[in-house]
Image 1 (tube, one colour):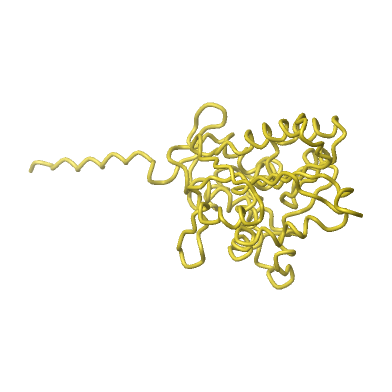
Image 2 (image 1 turned 180 degrees about the vertical axis):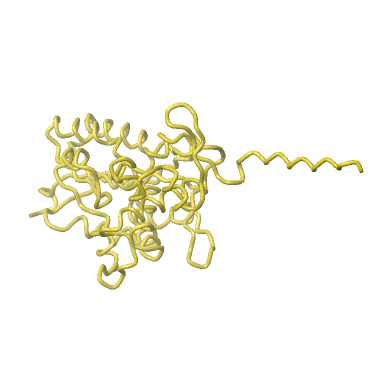
Amino acid sequence: MSETHARRSAIYVDFDNVLSGLREGAGVEVARHFAEAPEEWLAWLSQGVPRRFLLRRCYMNPAGYLEEADGMRRYFSSFRYAFQAAGFEVVDCPRLTRMKNGADLRIALDVMDALVSPLARIDEFTLLSSDSDFVPLLLRLRAADRTTRLVAHPELGRVVRAAADEVLGLDALAEALGWQREANRDQLFGPDLNQAILTVIRETMEGAAEPLHLPDLGQIVRDRTGETLRGSDYAGFGSVDAMLEAAGGYVRQDGTGGGYVLRPEWLPPREPAAAPESISE
């Protein structure tokens, strides 16, 4: 098929979401490879039907970072040039709240702009993200007779999976980047979803600046693993408190809507025990 008859495509990368998913599922080296060599996985996504990626956009929080095995931090901004060299427009999405960077909203707005653009008809939209918030967007694209592809966590929920025409797992992306499932049984792509949930909780709480509302934590876990806390039986531990203890000693505090999750240092100091009264002879 000639280039003029190739499928006209657009690709949108939720960088923070994908990088964290690859790091948790396949390790730091694979995540770094994804960030440093976008042309490799772009070629993998181009297989099969001939495609022209007319729009290439990557959404990242420049202040985010990837922690290397030696403890050094690689800030996401250092990966900007690699994406620009692969023909991507990089859109800065700094954190708007303590947990969200607004990339999902920017992606949704840009996709809708492309859908109605008079410049060129986009036949196929490819999203790299495990965020369940994209379900309404995917359904809107389907209603407009556009093909949709989603690259997301392999344990993606059924509702999100059903909204896309094609779903490619992050495990398949990791294998395209050189990850070997059989040689890396200690990684999380596979049956150990409970450990993935605990990892998300640890990383979320390590980055939190204040107590986190439990429903918010549940939403973050669902977005990044495709599983709900209740549906996973609280990562297999049967209760919120046991799950938090397994994640690293975090504690739940009663409150509205299920309460809050706190780091140990946020607990109020205990009142010192009163000294025993002396007994006069």
